[in-house]
Amino acid sequence: MPEVALPELLALLAVAVREGVTVIAFAIALSCADDLLLDAVFFVRRGWLGLTARRRPVPLHAADLRFGPQPPIAILVPAWDEAAVIGDMLRHLTATLDYGDYRVFVGTYPNDPATAVAVDAVVDPRIRRITLDHAGPTTKADCLNGLWRALEADEAACGRRVRAIVLHDAEDVVHRDELRVFAHHLDTLAMVQLPVVPLPDPGSRWVAGHYLDEFAEAHGKEIIVRAALGAAVPSAGVACAVDREVLGRLASAAGGTPFDPGCLTEDYELGHRIHALGLGAALVRVRSGHGVATVATREHFPATLDAAVRQKARWLLGIALQGWDRLGWRGGWADRWMLVRDRKAVIAAGLTLAGYAALAAGLLIAGVRACYPPLAAAPPLIEPGGIAAALLGFNLIALLWRLAMRALFTGRLHGWRQGVRAVPRAIVANVVNSMAAARALGRYVAIGRGRAHQRWDKTRHLVHRHGG
Image (cartoon, rainbow, N blue to C red; front, top):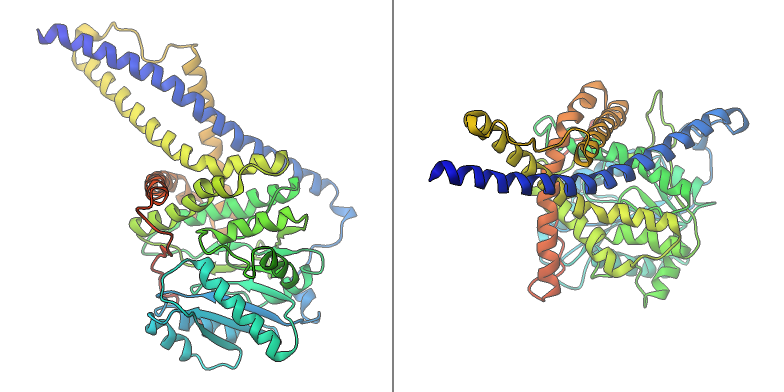
């Protein structure tokens, strides 16, 4: 009986795997084609810029801005449960920024006295701590709205408005020239985003390390392509400056505050709302030294699997799921293409898991066939020359290209050792993103059914001791 049942069972499993592989491979091929198209646009653009380099001005250097105008700028830093890092961040910021006229507004909650004490310990007339009138945590957008109201009151008392509003987080390591870069570019842009560069964590080379790879590509390629195609440029929520009048327009249109307190990714939506007004935004790269060094914000990212999953689940929930509900599919073809890219992340994570499952099933069948001679003559799972074989071949080539691109962009920014690590770290990224997608879907359903509420699902940050 077992000899009869086993071949039948394996035959059914083989058919399921064979059909499943074809469907999964086709879906992955579509995603790969999307990625390859974006890469093609990036390299064509780069090639064109290289051919026309002699006709364009010399790239801007941070030193060129040292003697430019310094209009007043406000820096908003929302903070919940940040006692471990906020003090060091503020001390570094005030000691580092080479700019004469700025104020820092830090938002804290009445039920978070430790963060308030840490902020008050940094004695500097440019720092103003604002205590929200309700307990936390709420959302980051709600905290920013409280800071916006405080800024308006401060402007009324001083009798002048700031030129720009800069967004930062409590763990950011700012660059000395960032405010000069913002002041220069806001003459022509409504929003300016600087690159965000994750700091390597020697204690978490794989989990924290995979952020190095993702941000190297995102801020070194993807956002550049978005701007080049005329699509909306999303804010990263840090190292981002917005024209004060533009943010005021957004606030007026929304009833007095610029951010929706129910939104989990207010930074992402900010870029889309500015784009909807027909105003310009861009990620700006300004050289600050030799080689590829640029004016950028650096920060630590989650070092543990749980923290990384929670952070990315919040991003996916806000961008891919709630973003679909809140933003729809507005804009031209470039905007819609980028919306597809943003929202396919949840599906891509599911495809990755399905691909791993199909691979495991295929290996199981191959192992049983090798150990059970009567099954050795059974048809192969993948017919040579068939559709599945062609799709798998294409996907393999696309995977090798994707790993090469990840290693290239990471290595260019962080050195060749990190570039080499980027290849195996792709597996870590797949695991984190898959777990985050599952968590995001669960929270999305729970919120939709009223079983969960929007809240600041923040991550614990590593303390970074600055030199000097």
